[in-house]
Length: 139
Image 1: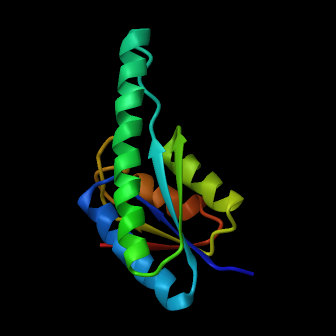
Image 2: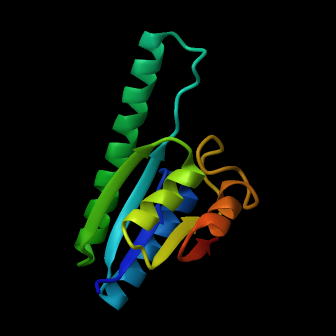
């Protein structure tokens, strides 16, 4: 059975640190690296056109972040798969790692306040509790 190391990447500095750690672990253990980004749902108080524009912009940002992550990992000889989901970061990460038989999830301790939470104790803590695999929190 192939090993899979996943990383939660939102583009924040702590998430890039987590990516570097996850890529190193994947390379040294012959595992595939799964880069997961979660696009949070847009507030329904916006007009339909504003919501569509905001969602498209957020998606484009995450696609660029993932493309950079993929290049970084591949230059280190790591096999990479990427995944962008829409919804709640906590449940989205947990569901994605279940579906992909992830052996280890690597996350940063802080991230964008709207995406990963400002302190370990928000989203990161919830992910640690919900994840069906081991979780490494990179400081």
